[in-house]
Length: 344
View 1 (tube, rainbow, N blue to C red):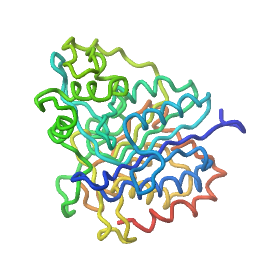
View 2: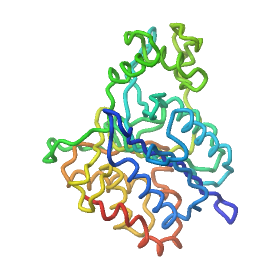
View 3: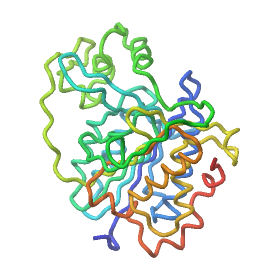
């Protein structure tokens, strides 16, 4: 149960990939708005909100190692009853099976140094959360459905989904980096041919800081090709407190909305903006299921071809988003004026 000693801890990551051909515009704005909302509405202390962006003058860049370290530190500080939150705005990608593996492509986020953080990494983080604490992830990135490996689908392509057939929205930048683009970039840095799997490049470049997903193949970290020994079959996860709100389904992209389309003149993520608008319109606590369903409705009304998803246990689907208390309702009017002004 929450009490006076309950901690509310957050890690917020915004990657605009400034100065690269993969540049986005709204990710840092998303993080700024989310930080305001966490403090004003949900009772997070500013000192307990870690922010990693690639904006000018940023203190900690959102590299793969830095993001992993921030998340690991947050989980290590947690005790039963604490509320943990991770928001990510940036590119996502899909990783094909490694040589000798079987199965479908799997989800990953793309830090600024392209040191991918995968669904396996998020599963391992969730498994380390103390019983009774909650760990909510909001990922405004492409192909983000299922970003916690083996988490139960509550709203998604198979459950509770009714995607619209068409869209009236103009073309926008997608928060998606194709696998080939990631290989080309890493190949230029590693010196290895782009025909190698991304695991080969990442283990060679980042060693122990590469995703746990790629270390099951026994990569040496010295530039040699990792072993092709198949990964062991996954075991069913224990009941956990991981909660994923994804900006879209695994087979979809999430939109980065340019400033000229946002009424407030600030670029933003379509999903992040939809979440902020739903929270602003509903001061009473919302369940995770209600928040995702209402965000879906906002995006559908605006003509976006992306359908947010919810992955968590049955109990957490009905639990209050970020465990908002009734007494916190009065603070909602101050929540995120920056993002509220940027709604589409």
